[in-house]
Amino acid sequence: MKTLVICSGGLDSVSLAHITAAEHHLTRLVSFDYGQRHRKEVDFAEAAAKRLGVPFHLIDMRGIGAALSGSALTDDIDVPDGHYAEDTMKITVVPNRNAIMLSIGFGIAAAQGDEAVATAVHGGDHFIYPDCRPGFTRAFDAMQQAALDGYADVRLHTPFVEQSKAEIVRQGARHATPFAETWSCYKGGAVHCGRCGTCVERREAFHLADVTDPTVYADPDYWTTALAARGEG
Image (cartoon, rainbow, N blue to C red; front, top):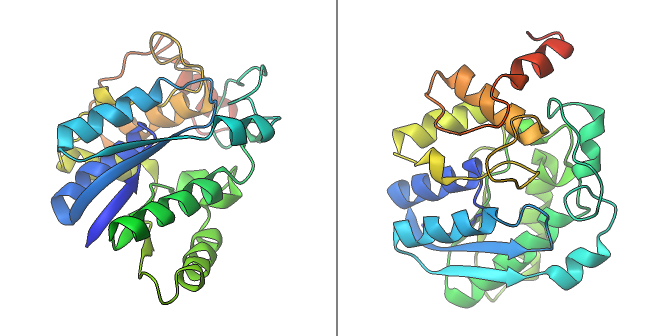
C-alpha cells in the first residue's frame, strides 16, 4: 500500500512513519506550519523523512492558522501543566486542524498516486480532540471517497485510533523508532518541559510500555504528581 504519512515530528507520527516504512510502501511525509508556537517539531519531521529516504513536504498554513485563534498552541496563552485528560487541556484545541490537514494530505496523495493517507491519532486524543475520534475518522474517510470519486482511490489509515500511547511506544520500539529524535512538548523550550499535557502523557506512556525513555525533561518527575492529582498515582 503506497502510503503518505502526516508527520508532525512527534512520537506518535514518527513511530507511524517507521512502522509504515517497514510494513507498507512509505512514499512521503507531509508536515504543516500553521503558526504553532512549538514549531521546532517540524525539524524532527524533516529529519525523519531524511532518515527514511522519502520526500518531505512542508505545507505553509500560517495564514489559515492565524484565523484559527484561541488556542494555547497558536496564541499568547499559557500552556497548562497537568495530565492530558484534564479539562484545562482543551485550551490546546486548534479548531478543525486535523480535518484541514487531512484534506490537504488527501489532495497530495491523489495527485501523486498514493493509495492511503496515514495519521497517528490515538485513543488518548479522544477526550480533548473531536477530530481524532473514531467517528470523525470514519466519516472523513467516507467524505473523501465521495470527494475523489472517479478520480482516485485513497483511503484513510488510522492504525492507532483505538490504541493507547503506550502501545504506540511498544510498536515504535519494535520498529527501531529513534524516540530521542521526536518532539512532543507544547512549550517548545530547549528540552521537553516535563509538565505540559503532552510531556506527562509521553512520560507515562514509556512507563506503561516498560520501554526506556531517552527524553530529556526539565522536570522529569512531575508526571507522577499529575497522575496522583487524578487519583492514578
